Every structure is written in structure tokens, then in C-alpha cells.
Image 1 (cartoon, rainbow, N blue to C red):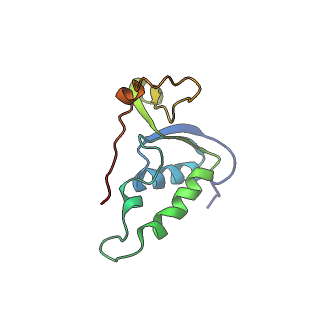
Image 2 (image 1 turned 90 degrees about the vertical axis):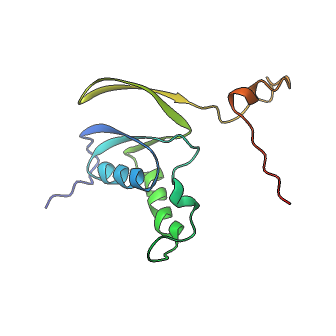
Length: 131
């Protein structure tokens, strides 16, 4: 059996979604020699599993299972994380796609802010009241 974890890149793939399935697929493909673009619409990978306490049916700690995969994915030289982004369009054909990705703004440049609050229309702000 040959070792496929060498530095040779044999092609590239895009995975849309950074949940547990996307993370596992990205890691397996990257370990096999593919360069992986992972597009996630939230600011971080992990998906719903990262918000759970326990997994079904074994009651295992969810983050104890997921966090090593998240760290390996973030550090892998063959994986490029494109978080807080959305796929806008896909053109081309099998094996030769062009993908347009829209990156969301992560913050407001305070030096350019005039206090008009128009940025809230593009990026709504939600507040939670804790009593």
C-alpha cells in the first residue's frame, strides 16, 4: 500500500459546507493529495455538531469528537478554508468548474463609519435579552 500523504497535489476540489461531513471529506481528500477549497457560510467550521453537548446514541462528548478534526482541517496545507462566504455561481463542466464566491464583511471599518447605521441593513444585528 502506498502512502498518499506526501506533498504532491493531484488536483483540486471544492466542498461546500463546513459541518462534520464536509470536514471529514475535506481531510480525507487533502490527505489523498487533492487541494481542497472548503466554503462555509458561517464564520467558523463545525456546523450543528459544534453546538451540541452529546451525540446520539452513545452520549459521547460532541466537541471531544469534532475538535481534533477541526484543528487538523484548519492546519492542513492542502485545505483552504473560505469561511463567512457563499457560492454565487458555478459555471463550466465536470473537471473544469469556475466558482464565484461572495465573501461577507466581518467587521465595519470604524475610521470610515459615520454612524448612519446603513451597514445594519446589509448585515442585520440581532440582540438577545437575557433576564
